[in-house]
Image: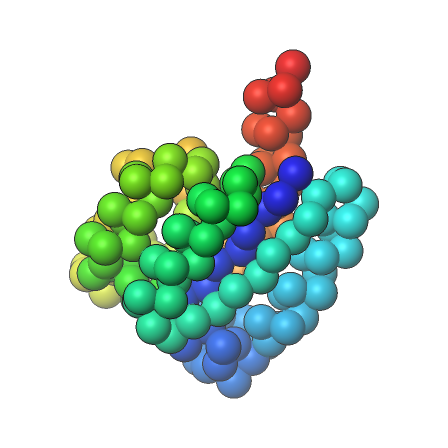
Length: 148
Ligand code: DQA
């Protein structure tokens, strides 16, 4: 299946950005790990990061046109602000897992609200970069169950 991994603003700075919260791995490191895992599981992985809300929305629209089967998304700060990205996911009905590196519930109160969690298949937070790998494994199993 085709799985798209979307990353929102400032995640291009992973590795240097608040490593105590977000870890030492760069986004490229995370991407490399996911690509290896995807290859083992037999999936095509697409990876996209943007600091611009509209680009993430357009990537979701393109994912729909291309028949992408599943999305893993870390909307980053847009988690707490973006009705527009939420609406793109609702409009395209692509199943997705929401991922956060940090435990958003253990931080500022404004990070506790997500515009995505209630429409996500599931949410993973606080497990660092391994959260993406767990999400990919879960997506793999969910896609398998769908075809059974
Ligand atoms: C984040 C958590 C968000 O609150 C924050 O704005 C981010 C990263 C995370 O992965 O922990 O940019 O999504």
